[in-house]
Image 1: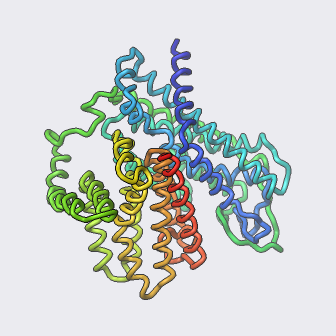
Image 2 (image 1 turned 135 degrees about the vertical axis):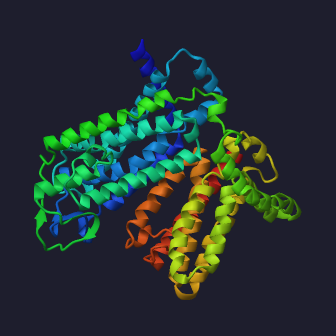
Image 3 (image 1 turned 90 degrees about the horizontal axis):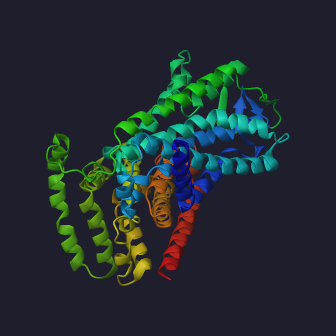
Length: 517
């Protein structure tokens, strides 16, 4: 009976997620990243260099590189793709049904973990198919499917289990349901990833291997022990076509590496214990926002932000007096700031900082500002649907298309601090300023497109935060310099981001027209 119940729950989880457009969008994004990172050696760029020698694109090399890319992204995006079922259950009314069933908390938690695991494994299989196609095009040896499967299981199975277990844990703890949990997980992911990078630079301790969910530390250690060197680069890098080449053997993975990965996989399962113990069971007082009464921390936050809430109060009245489309956009901005006083505080602080800080400090303000802005605007488009107001706002004059236009415009208005920084850059670095404007337009259009397609904020948030983090750690990559905060953007990359933004805007506009029809 228990096995049958787990099977039903897991299959239901998989079916529900496979119907989402976010699955296809995330898969296309991961495939694009893989094809971008594994460059064509004919162009003088390769994905891996060891001791100054290019690594041949054999099955083991491509499996290693592609699994490394997938592991980095699945550690973050996998969490956002799997979580969110509590909100769906509450909105559809299934939460009350599930709460009234005789199924135990452990059964529900394990069943959803299995469903998340199965869903992400299907995701990885589709990604593997794309990598095999890349091998057929750029590979330098036969396709060895067993080598690919071995590497993918070793590197990706623990991170898949970890992402699914974290998603279940965050959905089962009432305080972590919603955007607070989303942002918290991102910072935990950054801390773990940053700590592992620090360990790779000073090897010696074995205990970090056990919590290396991404597989980065095990991969780097295995390469170091096999080739007896620390001089290697994993990522797009130029090489000398006339130089010597290197081959990664098919028997790269040792029993020690397998042992660490199995232990890491088992450790990820421990997260299901607190998920079971603290499961809210869809109790309204534990899932929905709690009153600040009786909670000192929330009361302190409420009192601290009260002046901000008062400052925002005149905006709705002002929006009513402003005629036409401008008033509608101002009303959207007022709604965003009224619902989130912390967003209003961030907007005010960012505007002041962007206006008064020294020119040398603008880079830091832009880094923090674009991260805060992305977190704020990702929820604008899906907000109406999530609150049951989608049909009502779509019936207003102009319909769905006009709603899309005013929400997109509102996201640009909320980027005021970033616009001020771009204006200040335009005096001394016009290319950097152009990159900032192009990046903001592209990100605003992407948020509108993905929010409309998926009716959720998590897909854009996951891709945005992942790209933002990678850009911070790749300051010389012009294509990743989203809004010019690294200073490496070129005129070509600015034009490319502007073109991508136009395409995303056109796709979002077409989708809104289709929905209105």
